[in-house]
Length: 123
Image (cartoon, rainbow, N blue to C red; front, side, top):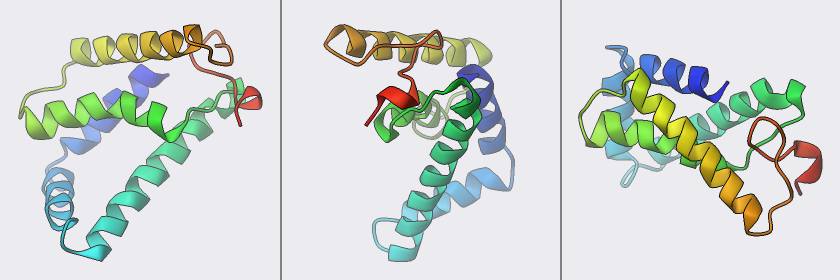
């Protein structure tokens, strides 16, 4: 699920109308409260949509866990100015799942079969 989500996000960010808009809003966010709020709304909306997709499995990820998932792809596209290939996305998801499992080993609340903590066990 996370792999398909990231590939869809990547494809959307590569759309000719989307990429310049995201860059423009991001560039203005430090100086324009409306742009800053727009970025917050975009991330919150995408996070909620991701959790909505996971909901039938009883899974919910935190904002921090979500950022750890999409952050490398955004960095690859906008900072590295490189392609986020399918292989790159596969590696990001594998690392993300590993990170969540390591969190569990440090005293987390248990992972389900998807590599994330079930919503019912999260506060």
